[in-house]
Amino acid sequence: MTAPASPALLQRTGITTALLIGAIGLFWGGNWPAVRFSLMDIPPFSLRAIGFTVGAVMLLGWAWIRQLPLAISAEEWPWLVIAGVFTILGFNVGTAFGQLHMPTSQAAIIAFTMPCWALLMAIGILGERITRRQWLGLGLGQAGLLILLGPAAWRAGSEGLVGPLFVLCAALSWALGTVLIKRRGGWKGHPVAITGWQFAICAVPMVLLAAGLESPTSPLEWRTTTWLGLSYHLVFAICLAQMLWFRNVNRLTIGQSTISTLIIPVVGVSSAVVLLGEPFTLHILVALALTLSAVAIVMTQRKTTA
Image (cartoon, rainbow, N blue to C red; front, side, top):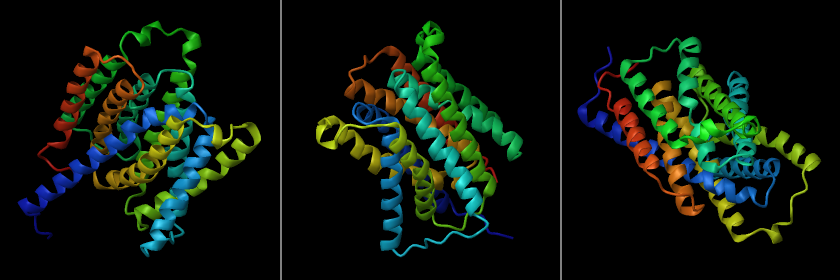
């Protein structure tokens, strides 16, 4: 029988989990205005082609320099490809096109309805039992997202549904990919190598679509904000956050890992207020309180889920 973990080990594990959640929230939250700035000069397929290619080169190169294993076992390749298509390709393409048709703050809110879909998918695919605390946390978090969205959701006509539809499909794609990562379980490959190969695979269709359908302006004509946004997007969102997300999903249950992402739209909306000049309202303050409460309720659960 395995000896129970010591209180000190449990405390260190809790601190590590909190740091992972905080890093993912900051990196992906700040990525929303960064992508908005990038899209001002770079078309969506070209932006994703650049991001996926640079992400693959940086992560696989880093793994090679650190002498991390680059090989992926034969049984893991199908799972790696399928999970990458949903979590990376589907989500990033959907959100890029969504931001072209709607405000960044609203796009971030709709994208992070993902925990709802992931929890429901986990019930059917993983047979995971969702606790009352998780449902409560999910409810509070979704209430915060609805408050952030506000009356704009009711004012949108049929012509305003294109952007939300793109982002909703992105959220569903991310949710399914996350559940599939958990469904595979026991990944043998290193997270850096797995994420790098996923970027390499997803870069191929983006490069082909960008070359065939888009004519981006010369990088010499890009604005300074475009360069800054693209740099942030490549380093923090593409490389660091995606790798941390893969690790987080394997450490926690679907309920914990997905509900923890509710902090990301709060960071995204707040950074949009500062960087894009959107108004800072009472709705944001209330949503922030609800979202942080949701994360705290789930992550301070005393009963550990196997």
